Length: 233
Image 1 (spheres, rainbow, N blue to C red):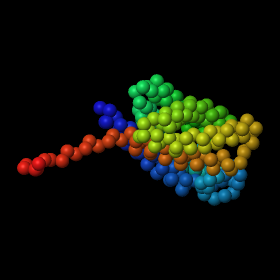
Image 2 (cartoon, one colour):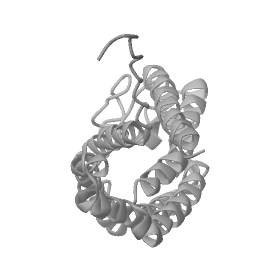
Image 3 (cartoon, one colour):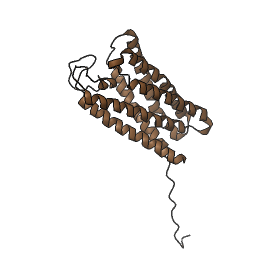
Image 4 (cartoon, rainbow, N blue to C red):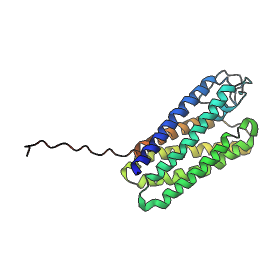
């Protein structure tokens, strides 16, 4: 039963990432153009566009973005839903003696998933600053769950420890990015391109962390018993 659950969690994470990358890539290809610093640019700018820019029905350059916006929203929905089996997998790496910490990771992770789903359906195009507030609220329990998971992975068994460095990097970059985002939101300014750059770095690190945890959750194959040859000593 435990091995089957591990396989399901691992497959759900890998499959979710594959779908997210496909949808997000298509949304980027279809994005008409425009950033918060230059509305005249054509097409998507990987390091200068926020992820949520792609969800706008009318792009920042004023051109319609009907198909791309739905693809982007679908991509983010898939990514957030993929975090559900990820938090389960991360918690399942905990030793039985750390069951309480594992339960806390599950609880905080699922609270973050629920709050992030609300963020997806509250785009900045329509909800303005409230979108930013929800981003911050959704990140807090997620960061807490990540900190607990990384803390255990750093001191846990070898299978868990191998996921710790990339998890720690993901958390560190995300916290810095959120801090910059929150400071710009409070100040009421657009901020700098450092925010979307860090956002992309955090995203890539997160995807890598998900894949590493998915790999570590895959059960070890049972050793194949070598048949004994009759007459052999």
